[in-house]
Image 1 (tube, helix red, strand yellow):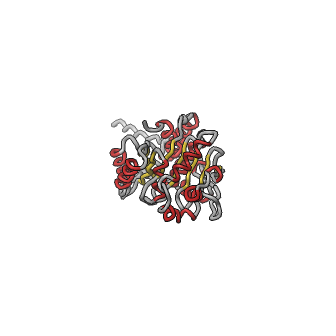
Image 2 (tube, one colour):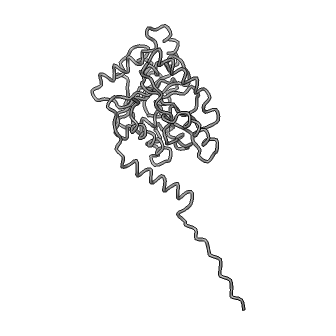
Image 3 (cartoon, helix red, strand yellow):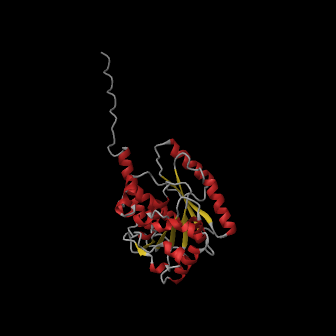
Length: 304
């Protein structure tokens, strides 16, 4: 009689080797790495303008979450809300009702920043210079003023020079247009941080933005440089997002941070609670990504 055939080997499925398990393991590894790292603090204040003429790319979200991540890592951070919508002020939980003294009073009325700046409930080393709806009229009022492009810079540099304990970082959140408020932000800063959405048309308008920055560098602020580009709203499951991310990295290899910010419901929800995602859901993928991006910025240091 013929020998009976050997039974087919049964494939053993590892219950710990699933997409969800791998994702959880990756988040745990990233969380552990961040928990043990001590970020270097800059020797001089780094002032960033967060800008992109295209709306909806995550400028305000990036501003407040990077600021909160750096503050919780031990840095003293100031956020200047220069957008009349005041979304950065909302996310940081500071008062910005119409009757609140704000950045408008600094730029238009020469009020000192120290009388207006507020400490965010997020962290006791995170400060915010709030915006109110009055800022919407500032563009027109600035037109006839002396040194209209330098007013924020003058006030901010005076405040930083007179503050007993040094600020390590300043982030200026701009409106999505190139008016006098945005020009004030570029003149006040040393570095530009550009959030780029990982979607179609992501690079649209970027050439014009870089040309405008170059003009400001030549005529108004010779120390201005595009030091950081952050990929936002990244969905690794789509070919389009991966292609856009690769295109941006090819064009700006030295400026792009390695960690993209994923699309995340938790990131979107956080401002409605007057919080950043760093405190709203510290263990989420969005929070970890912003913390990793902030750590990379701290490690890189200011450009030479």
